[in-house]
Length: 337
Image 1 (cartoon, rainbow, N blue to C red):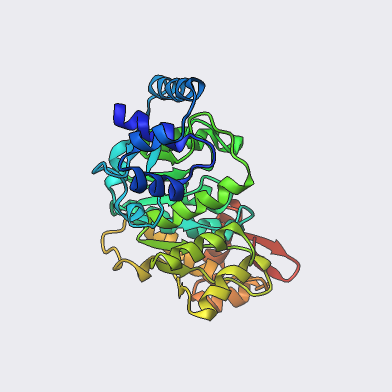
Image 2: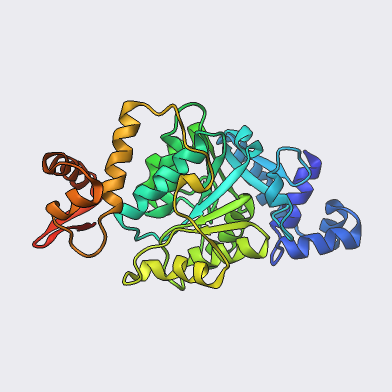
């Protein structure tokens, strides 16, 4: 406990981040000696004690990078957080992980694709890490949580682990704590500012052995996360989309430059599941229909020729896809929503 207190006193000191923390500890031999060198006042130590008491009352844990439960992939990142706070199931941190990120303004089709990918990873015991933002992040967490068994997901926050943002995702936050974990390098109760989100993206990239990028504008934070992952030597995949949509610019550019591999679906990572039930087969049929629909309107008669189904079957499946918000009807036929 005293060692943790020393580490937090050093990390909570002004202008101390992972880089300066490591330099001070190397220079003075230990966090305790480094703290002494800073001549911190009593108010600083009281602040750290209050934070630790607040964390204990809220069921929040501190995990140092020398603990065996500290995420292994993150620990390999240069200048990683020396201490992270965790709320939820600590055992989630032992799981192999994949990171999935993308735009907050994802299409229904894009979010559906991400949900399916996340569910496939989670159902195989791989925790899905993302940033709990709206859109793609929400789809990734929700997809992981929809898998059977003890499927788990990790949300990396820019603020304290007790600070729920966006507030619209409060119910998702509660579900993640129940079946996964919320983590942060920031103090308990910390309210984030824009610079904290860039650092948060570094740790999302560092957690996963792979990173999958969904829809993303060319200058988005998700693109920054993908670049961090590439710098860390992670296996980067990108989900392509129609070039007329600005949300396709990010993933398409990474694929074109060779920075990312083209992600076409679950089959890129796992062999086909031979034990799917009838409901899953139906979903696959609907997905084949969805694959035939893009940004250019396609009529029902043309769709019957593409997917080799009767007009009545096509109509029934289109109704389901409409209800799911994946397609919409226009004057010329159906397009992706």
